[in-house]
Length: 129
Image (tube, rainbow, N blue to C red; front, side, top):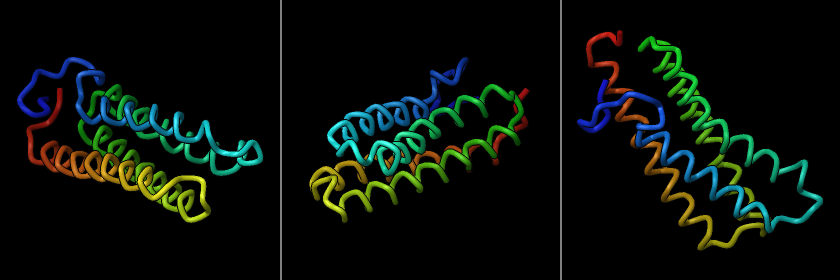
């Protein structure tokens, strides 16, 4: 398997996983400023969605079967869309600034496109051993 012509030996070699971890780290930073009363609300939801993206990429890779991996990549895409929705809502209720959400959405959209391309490349490639 190869992501952007590099040899992939471990899920940590995947660009999509690295970008997903960066986004998760950013979510923790952004939500640190949310009010305490949101700890079990949007703060928790955003963190869970953010952690879900790289976690599903890693779990799918660990299954060592292309079909299963593709399914987990699709689950990661779904979690990313959840996260985008939560960030947009956080901005609408005044928890994130317009600038914060715009920058955040650029990152999530870039990862989303990369995930779509990666899934398509895996679907076109020969079966993973």
